[in-house]
Length: 203
Image 1 (spheres, helix red, strand yellow):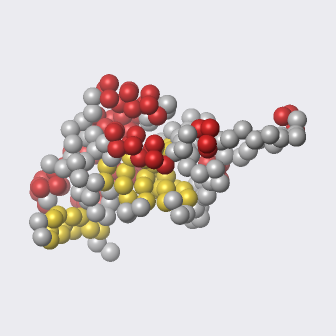
Image 2 (cartoon, rainbow, N blue to C red):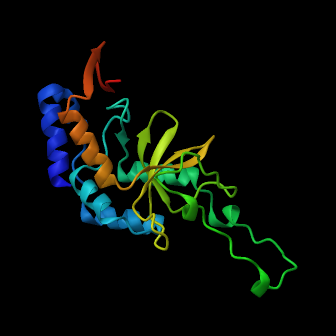
Image 3 (cartoon, rainbow, N blue to C red):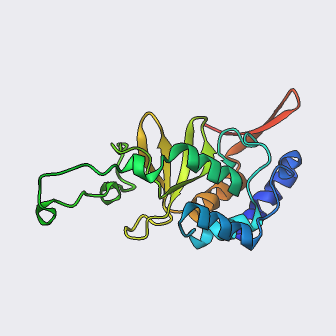
């Protein structure tokens, strides 16, 4: 993760040095642990490594097209906004069925795959084990999954309130690595307008 971030910083220092300063210093270990405790989850190791290097960006629009990384505080605030309290999200409803005859509810993660083009809508609302960490394309956010049971742990999921959830990347490591590759391959251009610098993907 250190190498990937250095590649990104090196590219920015050459092509858009004014953007490098928007990346915040890394979080302390205590801050990471406190955030895990507040969210009652365990971060994937690559997320911890990334936040030790950069604890978000100062301006949530520092890169228009690709991402704006949340600080740990922003992460908790966003999660609190999207995730209702447990008692509201999973109300106890009376049932006439004997518990042993109730069919277990299938988790939406079972049917999620990179090949699936359709979004998955969860009737109960936002899944509390999805942790928002990246602002993506205005109202869309990218989350990493912390569900320890299914094979989606660490997977990056895109959430859009109007359409639900969809697969975005197999991991933050892969997503960030691909971004570094694209930068070095010249797939992004820098635009400066009225004192504002942004990166745009070359179509």
